[in-house]
Amino acid sequence: SDSSGGVSIGYNDPGTAKLAIDGNVGIGTTAPEGKLDVNGGIISRGAFSVYSTEAGQTDRRLTVNTNVAGLTTIYNYDGGDTLMYPIQIGSNTAGTGLTINAGNVGIGTTGPNAKLDVTGNIYTGTATQPTTGNGLYIGGPTLWAYDYSGGTGYKAINISGRTISLNTDVWEASPALYIDSNRNVGIGTASPGNKLQVHNYAAGNQTLFMLSGGTGVNATAIGDAVTIGLDTYNSGAYPVKLTSIATQAAPSHPNNNFYISTNTNGTDNTRFFIKNDGNVGIGTTAPTSRLTANTQSPSANALLFNVQNTGSNVFSVDAEGDFFYDGTGSSPSADVAEIYPTTETGIVSGEIVSLSVGDSNAQTVIRPGMASDPNLLGVVTTKPALLLGSNVESGVAVALIGRVPVKVNDQNGVIVKGDYVTSSSTPGVGMKATVAGMVVGRALEDVRCEETSDNKQDTNLEQDTSEKVQGISETCTTMVFTNLSWYDPTHEALALTTTPIDTAKYKDLTTDTMTVNQTLSVLGASTLSDTTITGTLNIGLLSIENSSINVAGGILNLQDAYGAGNIQVFGGKIVMTTDGSVQLVGSLSADSIEVNTATVHQGITIFDEVTGLPTCVTVREGVVTVVDGACVK
Image 1 (tube, rainbow, N blue to C red):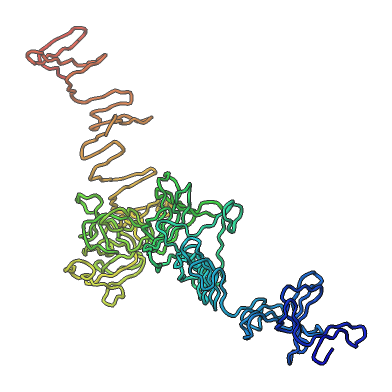
Image 2: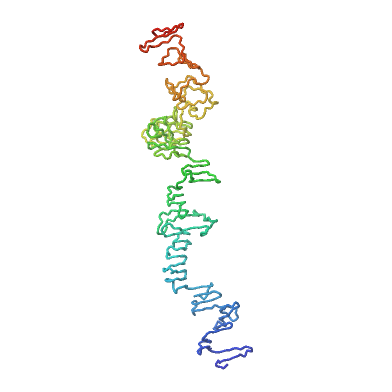
């Protein structure tokens, strides 16, 4: 080559043929602007490298080559192929172009840390944020996917900050799916107040959640049966909670009731219902109590409630209110009571009541107005274990049997355990029974109605009366075993027993006086000596009252038993023998007598039909004699 940098072909290096040109070379141009200026295409049969000898970048090369797999590769490396360098495409300003480094691609950054690292916004389908067409926008913490296919745009995907919203229509206020920064998930709402809240703005009944088995959308299922499992390790107050939210956004749902329904041929049937006031209905959407079970037009014995133990009924209630239980009922209360109507006001628990004799209203009770009232009925209970006749209006519950507290006083002295209690002179208040009469029961504890008594109650405060019985100043309460019965202190054992008398205990019973006011039953043979009955004696249909013997119907039979003897009246003046004969001492008067045969020993007196005068007919030695006047014995 010449000294001016002309063409030099070949070097002194043996076996090496090189073309060295000092200056710009133009191919297809006469005015090359660089070391090599090609006007047209370049075809290389091998690797094509471009390298720079700028200061600090000695032997740095950009190579285009085809690898063993037949793929074209572009890489930046040093001459020894030991160190790869980034490739930057774009602007001379750092971070504004495209950088490829170690397999990572950076847009807007010279140090990409991932396969694709973009600094700045990303737009697809539009040059700016999409507002009039379909497109994708990614900027900062925001990602929008716009859909304008329906003519009106909306954000189908909206990721902004720490929230995610997915929409299927323009109702962005009620997105199809929304996740807020608190990790709450909303379906149909952009303001979920719980971990999962489903909301619907459409009018009418809408299905918000459905699980389907079989050929439908599969849920957790066994065969065609859908199973919903709720499990939690939370030890808080509500491990699992189903509720109706009362703070819904408009349009409001003021009833906030809870339904569980089934569907039969397109008809919705509510099976379980919780009203917003807390009442629960089974088979009804109008429960009137904390639990109301209803069946429409059931059969008489259809069960509404049933509890089983190993397949056997232990407690059940049918549609007519009948119930069955196979076990023992238990209650802290200790009496059985029945409601009786009353026209008297102010009757309270613990007071004694009597039948209102003469009242036109049946079964009416009042406070007794006298001591040892014969019309006693019982004691008004406090809290019975079983209450009968609950359909009675304006009534009081009277204990039939069991333990009840009874108001008493000291009118007949101090009451001790075992004493019988009857009515006192104070209406509604009891006292110790000391004479024969009706009693309401037997005291189970000692009680003293004194000023120092812990259970003392002022009579005037407890009863609607302004007067006190002389000598009675306090009313107190004692526990009584109620058992309405007749009590006679002189014959206590006999008067109150309801079982046969123990013959070993009462083998020889002697008493001066016995009064039987109700029923005396004697099952064996009895001998009564000097027995006086001042009233009526009724024996079956036979009634003996005063001087009259009557039979209510049929025939009065005398000496009808086998082997009976004659019947004798008036000390033998009239005798009826067992063969049917009647022996009469004295005259027999009758309007007419009809006999088959007659035997006459001393004549027959016959009265004239016209004059009415007697005529005596006798027979003596075969001669019939008729004389005026009656026959004389």
